[in-house]
Image (cartoon, rainbow, N blue to C red; front, top):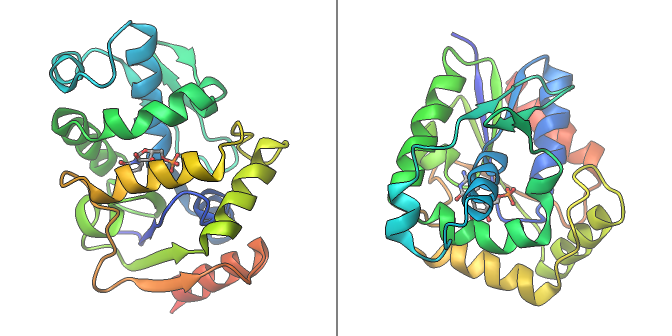
Length: 218
Ligand code: C5P
Protein backbone atom coordinates (compact mmCIF):
# COMPACT_ATOMS: atom_id res chain seq x y z
CA UNK A 1 0.00 0.00 0.00
CA UNK A 2 1.13 3.56 -0.67
CA UNK A 3 1.62 6.24 1.91
CA UNK A 4 -1.13 8.53 3.17
CA UNK A 5 -0.18 12.09 4.09
CA UNK A 6 -2.88 13.76 6.21
CA UNK A 7 -2.87 17.55 6.33
CA UNK A 8 -5.26 19.31 8.70
CA UNK A 9 -5.60 22.86 9.92
CA UNK A 10 -7.85 25.94 9.97
CA UNK A 11 -8.75 28.04 6.95
CA UNK A 12 -5.97 30.30 5.75
CA UNK A 13 -3.24 28.11 7.23
CA UNK A 14 -2.05 27.51 3.66
CA UNK A 15 -3.32 23.95 3.61
CA UNK A 16 -4.57 23.71 0.04
CA UNK A 17 -1.58 25.09 -1.82
CA UNK A 18 0.81 23.19 0.45
CA UNK A 19 -1.04 19.87 0.17
CA UNK A 20 -1.40 20.10 -3.58
CA UNK A 21 2.20 21.21 -4.06
CA UNK A 22 3.49 18.38 -1.87
CA UNK A 23 1.42 15.83 -3.79
CA UNK A 24 2.88 17.01 -7.09
CA UNK A 25 6.42 16.93 -5.78
CA UNK A 26 5.99 13.49 -4.18
CA UNK A 27 4.20 12.05 -7.22
CA UNK A 28 1.10 11.28 -5.16
CA UNK A 29 -2.60 11.80 -5.71
CA UNK A 30 -4.36 14.71 -3.99
CA UNK A 31 -7.72 15.02 -2.25
CA UNK A 32 -9.25 18.31 -1.08
CA UNK A 33 -12.02 17.22 1.32
CA UNK A 34 -13.13 20.82 1.93
CA UNK A 35 -14.10 21.02 -1.76
CA UNK A 36 -16.44 18.07 -1.18
CA UNK A 37 -18.25 19.81 1.70
CA UNK A 38 -18.42 22.94 -0.42
CA UNK A 39 -19.86 21.09 -3.42
CA UNK A 40 -22.64 19.54 -1.32
CA UNK A 41 -23.35 22.97 0.17
CA UNK A 42 -23.56 24.48 -3.32
CA UNK A 43 -26.02 21.76 -4.34
CA UNK A 44 -28.20 22.29 -1.23
CA UNK A 45 -28.41 26.04 -1.87
CA UNK A 46 -29.23 25.52 -5.52
CA UNK A 47 -31.91 22.97 -4.60
CA UNK A 48 -33.48 25.56 -2.29
CA UNK A 49 -32.70 23.61 0.87
CA UNK A 50 -32.45 25.90 3.91
CA UNK A 51 -28.87 25.17 4.95
CA UNK A 52 -29.51 25.87 8.64
CA UNK A 53 -32.29 23.24 8.73
CA UNK A 54 -30.24 20.19 9.70
CA UNK A 55 -33.17 17.77 9.26
CA UNK A 56 -33.83 18.99 5.73
CA UNK A 57 -30.13 18.86 4.82
CA UNK A 58 -29.89 15.33 6.27
CA UNK A 59 -32.98 14.21 4.35
CA UNK A 60 -31.42 15.26 1.07
CA UNK A 61 -27.83 14.27 1.86
CA UNK A 62 -27.86 11.27 -0.47
CA UNK A 63 -29.23 13.10 -3.52
CA UNK A 64 -26.32 15.00 -5.03
CA UNK A 65 -24.19 12.89 -7.38
CA UNK A 66 -20.72 14.00 -6.30
CA UNK A 67 -17.56 13.07 -8.22
CA UNK A 68 -14.04 14.04 -7.28
CA UNK A 69 -10.77 13.66 -9.20
CA UNK A 70 -7.45 13.15 -7.39
CA UNK A 71 -4.92 14.36 -9.99
CA UNK A 72 -2.92 17.17 -8.30
CA UNK A 73 -2.34 18.78 -11.69
CA UNK A 74 -6.03 18.92 -12.43
CA UNK A 75 -8.29 18.57 -9.37
CA UNK A 76 -11.86 18.20 -10.65
CA UNK A 77 -15.15 18.26 -8.81
CA UNK A 78 -18.60 17.80 -10.30
CA UNK A 79 -22.11 17.57 -8.87
CA UNK A 80 -24.84 16.06 -11.03
CA UNK A 81 -22.44 16.36 -13.95
CA UNK A 82 -21.77 20.08 -13.45
CA UNK A 83 -18.23 21.38 -12.90
CA UNK A 84 -18.49 23.34 -9.64
CA UNK A 85 -14.83 24.14 -9.04
CA UNK A 86 -15.53 27.88 -9.48
CA UNK A 87 -18.88 28.36 -7.71
CA UNK A 88 -17.86 26.42 -4.59
CA UNK A 89 -15.43 29.27 -3.78
CA UNK A 90 -18.16 31.94 -3.66
CA UNK A 91 -18.79 33.89 -0.48
CA UNK A 92 -22.32 32.42 -0.24
CA UNK A 93 -21.02 28.87 -0.19
CA UNK A 94 -18.13 29.75 2.11
CA UNK A 95 -20.48 31.28 4.68
CA UNK A 96 -22.93 28.33 4.53
CA UNK A 97 -20.50 25.40 4.48
CA UNK A 98 -19.95 25.18 8.24
CA UNK A 99 -23.67 24.57 8.86
CA UNK A 100 -23.94 21.90 6.18
CA UNK A 101 -20.75 20.13 7.22
CA UNK A 102 -22.01 19.93 10.83
CA UNK A 103 -24.85 17.60 9.77
CA UNK A 104 -23.92 14.01 10.75
CA UNK A 105 -25.53 12.42 7.68
CA UNK A 106 -23.41 14.64 5.45
CA UNK A 107 -20.22 13.77 7.32
CA UNK A 108 -21.01 10.06 7.24
CA UNK A 109 -21.49 10.10 3.50
CA UNK A 110 -18.41 12.17 2.74
CA UNK A 111 -16.07 10.37 5.14
CA UNK A 112 -17.05 7.04 3.54
CA UNK A 113 -16.41 8.51 0.09
CA UNK A 114 -13.06 9.92 1.21
CA UNK A 115 -11.94 6.54 2.56
CA UNK A 116 -12.89 4.96 -0.73
CA UNK A 117 -10.91 7.58 -2.65
CA UNK A 118 -7.90 7.03 -0.39
CA UNK A 119 -8.12 3.33 -1.18
CA UNK A 120 -4.67 1.81 -1.14
CA UNK A 121 -2.99 5.13 -0.45
CA UNK A 122 -0.41 7.02 -2.45
CA UNK A 123 -2.21 10.24 -1.64
CA UNK A 124 -2.08 13.57 0.19
CA UNK A 125 -5.41 14.32 1.87
CA UNK A 126 -6.31 17.75 3.16
CA UNK A 127 -9.09 18.77 5.57
CA UNK A 128 -10.15 19.21 9.18
CA UNK A 129 -10.55 15.65 10.45
CA UNK A 130 -8.19 13.61 8.28
CA UNK A 131 -5.64 12.59 10.91
CA UNK A 132 -8.31 11.93 13.54
CA UNK A 133 -11.29 10.45 11.69
CA UNK A 134 -10.85 9.86 7.97
CA UNK A 135 -7.37 8.31 8.08
CA UNK A 136 -6.30 7.73 11.69
CA UNK A 137 -3.62 5.31 10.42
CA UNK A 138 -2.08 7.85 8.03
CA UNK A 139 1.67 7.48 7.47
CA UNK A 140 2.32 11.15 8.18
CA UNK A 141 0.05 13.65 9.93
CA UNK A 142 0.72 17.34 9.66
CA UNK A 143 -1.26 20.03 11.43
CA UNK A 144 -0.75 23.46 9.86
CA UNK A 145 -1.32 26.63 11.82
CA UNK A 146 -0.71 30.35 11.28
CA UNK A 147 -1.47 33.45 13.32
CA UNK A 148 -4.97 34.78 12.72
CA UNK A 149 -3.87 38.02 11.05
CA UNK A 150 -1.66 36.15 8.62
CA UNK A 151 -4.49 33.73 7.82
CA UNK A 152 -6.83 36.63 7.03
CA UNK A 153 -4.13 38.18 4.85
CA UNK A 154 -3.68 34.93 2.91
CA UNK A 155 -7.42 34.62 2.38
CA UNK A 156 -7.45 38.16 1.01
CA UNK A 157 -4.54 37.41 -1.33
CA UNK A 158 -6.38 34.36 -2.64
CA UNK A 159 -9.40 36.55 -3.38
CA UNK A 160 -7.17 38.73 -5.54
CA UNK A 161 -6.52 35.90 -7.96
CA UNK A 162 -4.67 33.28 -5.98
CA UNK A 163 -4.85 29.55 -6.58
CA UNK A 164 -8.38 29.11 -5.32
CA UNK A 165 -9.63 32.64 -6.06
CA UNK A 166 -11.93 32.52 -3.08
CA UNK A 167 -13.93 35.67 -2.60
CA UNK A 168 -12.34 37.64 0.20
CA UNK A 169 -13.84 37.11 3.61
CA UNK A 170 -13.42 39.73 6.28
CA UNK A 171 -11.36 38.81 9.29
CA UNK A 172 -14.65 38.67 11.20
CA UNK A 173 -16.23 36.18 8.77
CA UNK A 174 -13.09 34.06 8.97
CA UNK A 175 -13.25 34.10 12.78
CA UNK A 176 -16.94 33.10 12.72
CA UNK A 177 -16.24 30.16 10.40
CA UNK A 178 -13.31 28.97 12.51
CA UNK A 179 -15.47 29.14 15.62
CA UNK A 180 -18.28 27.14 13.99
CA UNK A 181 -15.78 24.60 12.68
CA UNK A 182 -14.00 24.20 15.99
CA UNK A 183 -16.77 24.25 18.58
CA UNK A 184 -19.26 21.83 17.12
CA UNK A 185 -19.13 18.32 18.50
CA UNK A 186 -19.56 16.45 15.22
CA UNK A 187 -16.27 17.74 13.90
CA UNK A 188 -13.97 19.63 16.16
CA UNK A 189 -11.18 21.38 14.35
CA UNK A 190 -9.19 18.50 15.63
CA UNK A 191 -5.56 18.00 15.97
CA UNK A 192 -4.44 14.37 16.15
CA UNK A 193 -2.28 13.61 19.18
CA UNK A 194 0.41 12.24 16.85
CA UNK A 195 0.30 15.10 14.34
CA UNK A 196 3.37 17.21 13.67
CA UNK A 197 2.42 20.85 14.17
CA UNK A 198 3.84 23.21 11.58
CA UNK A 199 3.39 26.94 12.17
CA UNK A 200 3.48 28.52 8.70
CA UNK A 201 3.25 32.17 9.76
CA UNK A 202 6.88 32.86 8.91
CA UNK A 203 7.27 30.34 6.09
CA UNK A 204 6.66 30.77 2.38
CA UNK A 205 4.78 28.17 0.35
CA UNK A 206 7.90 26.46 -0.93
CA UNK A 207 9.28 26.09 2.58
CA UNK A 208 6.04 24.50 3.79
CA UNK A 209 6.02 22.08 0.85
CA UNK A 210 9.65 21.16 1.55
CA UNK A 211 8.93 20.36 5.20
CA UNK A 212 5.96 18.18 4.28
CA UNK A 213 8.00 16.33 1.65
CA UNK A 214 10.83 15.79 4.14
CA UNK A 215 8.39 14.27 6.65
CA UNK A 216 6.90 12.02 3.96
CA UNK A 217 10.36 10.85 2.89
CA UNK A 218 11.41 9.79 6.38
O1 C5P B 1 -10.84 23.70 3.54
P1 C5P B 1 -12.01 24.54 3.17
O2 C5P B 1 -11.94 25.94 3.72
O3 C5P B 1 -12.33 24.53 1.72
O4 C5P B 1 -13.24 23.83 3.90
C1 C5P B 1 -14.53 24.36 3.81
C2 C5P B 1 -15.38 23.92 5.01
O5 C5P B 1 -15.67 22.52 4.94
C3 C5P B 1 -14.75 24.13 6.38
O6 C5P B 1 -14.99 25.43 6.85
C4 C5P B 1 -15.44 23.06 7.23
O7 C5P B 1 -16.70 23.54 7.67
C5 C5P B 1 -15.73 21.96 6.23
N1 C5P B 1 -14.80 20.83 6.29
C6 C5P B 1 -15.02 19.82 7.22
N2 C5P B 1 -14.23 18.72 7.23
C7 C5P B 1 -13.21 18.59 6.35
C8 C5P B 1 -12.95 19.60 5.40
C9 C5P B 1 -13.76 20.72 5.41
O8 C5P B 1 -15.94 19.94 8.02
N3 C5P B 1 -12.46 17.48 6.37
